[in-house]
Image 1 (cartoon, rainbow, N blue to C red):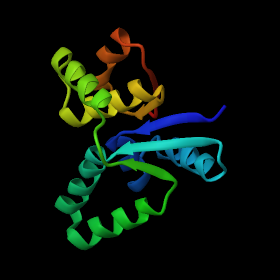
Image 2: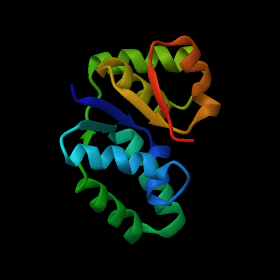
Image 3: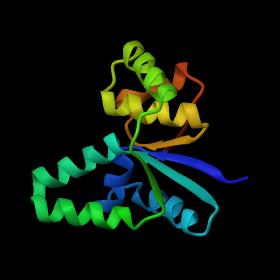
Image 4: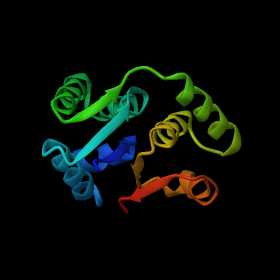
Length: 138
């Protein structure tokens, strides 16, 4: 059975910036090239990566990063399904987390995927109270 993963922004940032945990994320993406995994990322979470790069290095570098990501075997989810919409709303109302994180969590919950993240400060409580699998990269 193919493993399913959802990446949040900090997972992608770890790879891009060579941070701790980046090698774990790169290994998941490499497995997707071999057809062993499917990797998803909501466009809202990709936006977080984009605006961080835009703010720190400017538009040419931010655009270049999006081009590189678009060539990876990461399925960018551009629309928010009704199920993700409702689940993200429930998660956002129940926990003190960002809207983007609530969408990443909802993507993972509704698809039965593992959420790849390092964002303990917002998601530890979610892990304790929700039926969701996390892959903590650090």
